Image (cartoon, rainbow over all chains, first blue to last red; front, side, top):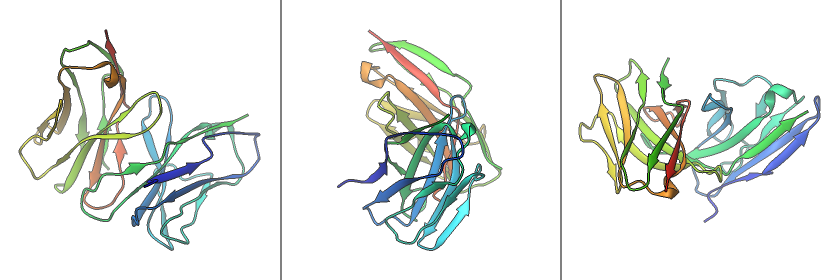
Length: 113
Length: 114
């Protein structure tokens, strides 16, 4: 059982470049979300989805786009990378049951120069 | 808006001893859940323990237990018989109802010394 799979593990971008972080889960979870982790700030929610075709913004959505065309996949797009987007990114999924814990991918370390 | 605060950026403990990590939160909601996650140097996020706000009984998982004080909005994690493998960053997190969204504290880096 793969759980939540994120690719790539590491990425270096130049300012202004675009890229997509991939996330897939095989647990048939309804809810999926993206977080970024910065030193001293914990993890902050970027975007989330409660099901295919439904997405919404989290705490820090600027500069990121998402879509959810299938239950399994929830890619995160950076349209024009900025140094402020240097961070570690985590994808997570969970069921729609009350208080169900999140399952996390292994993270992507992104550096924007 | 809900907030979660971990006031101890770093802590250390000797192997086999007990350590307590602090967490406070602020919410006006009644139906919520609290979690502790562990992040070892591998960067993986691992669920340690989960607490339902409507349950007065403190959750326990082997060497890990919580002290949940709902009125004080406090949710501390106690690690007994600390092991070298417990060295990690620990995050306290809050979830309202069945939103599937977590609000995290800033994290506490725990070092277990031999």
